[in-house]
Length: 455
Image (cartoon, rainbow, N blue to C red; front, side, top):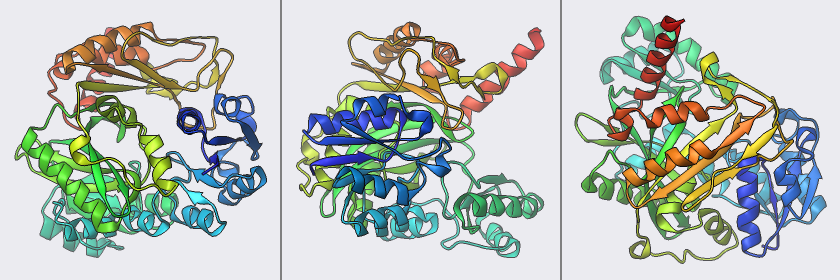
């Protein structure tokens, strides 16, 4: 691998460029009209302009990305996360063009991207799965029959989906009959596939995911991350290791993740996601993300492993050099996603020009961002502007340091969620790790009600 094209933008493109440069690999950025002067375009060794600002006309056009790779002389393509990262057809097209795709093979992306097939693979690998349908259902009648067997409440999920789209929780048959066409239609619009599958809805659960690396033959895990604090099924704060599981569950969950990787011959970095039932302590496979994750830095902090560099080495054909016994977790890390949104106006995005940026520093504080003076938050893309990642010897130290770090962060000119994250740090339930996947939204609803009553 001599020259790498990064088929992405924002903080993840900056992150990949830095890892590649550390390995002596030349970098090529792609930039839409909105990103002509963006940080990733400035940091790369060269840049190819790929068209209009809307992602559908630039970053999501696989043919344009591959043409840019050819034009620039790149021999590899890293998709980052989002955009084309989990599109099997894009991975196949990159390979067909004689380029190296930094990720698993197209067949594995397709297999694990289909939630029904992924469940079947997990079962074959002896990985616990949430009780539910083993095949997709494509009609209300079939869904009603399946729900009667599973028992209410059930969760409807898009067979080909992710990112929270096409998901509904239904309490009874009446709700299911109404929700199924809506969810199926949403899935068909988002993914081109309206099939749904049903699984038992776990009322109180944590969302815990395991970071994995595989070279197609061998696989290792880089411990787990706690991802339960979510708004509209989008993660807001992540931690490693999870403060909500014990060593027995951790050992079983990580071992199950490695088995799954070996079952499919997984090659690259990836994440195996689980729900952990608060009441029973059981854990269940829910999906696998076949890419680098937004929250990968917390795993890097506790392990000392550069996961993006590991991805690049594996893609270049190197066998996995890491052995499980050599991967040791030390301390605790927390990541806070800072978005250009106004929490007091229902998280309305706030695009605009950045007037001033002051990034936090000091020991064990890392900020992954594309921000700079005079940069602009575009209305065309995700509102994430920075990730503040903090490490400490233990969780209490990490949280105390997080309060200091977020207090130092200044982003003026647009609204941000920084203040909300500082409020979150002051909540006793957060400090004591008494939360599940529904806790953050419950707190936000209480916060909004309290603010409304005080006016």
